Length: 270
Image (cartoon, rainbow, N blue to C red; front, side, top):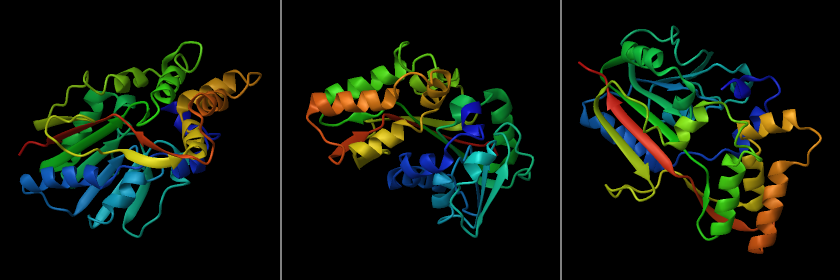
């Protein structure tokens, strides 16, 4: 996660082009929370980045804490009167009082954390029966252009592209968090698409190819690659130009994108 904390990371680009979590994600979290007699007073979003999740939680909860180790990311965070942002690691939530939190979310961040230490903090700050929700997403899929999907996957995993330029946590995410043990009660794991319980997709968008190009440039692996190989052509531009040529697309063409997603839900003990 060190890349996102760099002072040279473009947090404004991240805020503008990272995909959001649609209403289905929040509905699943709130429904799970309500089943366990949860209240909606305080929420915490760990690894909040630019406040994508925190800003939506603020519509439901009286107060929201957004915590992130990167001052750079928080500089571009969405501001609302009932959100407090703090520079803090997920493994050290000392700003949050013990047993005060109704719902704690961690979006596209769980793979960067030290899990035993982090879950110790989760248990400390959550109220009895408080809800934990973690969401993560893998490489984007084009609904109608399979060769484009393959190009994006190759960009992300091939050693001669970005495959060796990710921090180690990326492998945990690629495995859709299946290796992470969650020491909470009533744990549920949901995988999208093709969710066996019939829940709708959590992450899908219609975006222009130019928008998608900029999204790829928010990847931490891309930033690391570009810094280490300033002499090489822009690897994202190369990928997008290949997709445009092979699929007969233009920069302004709008495409349907889905992100394979995992959602983990659990609750604190009484």
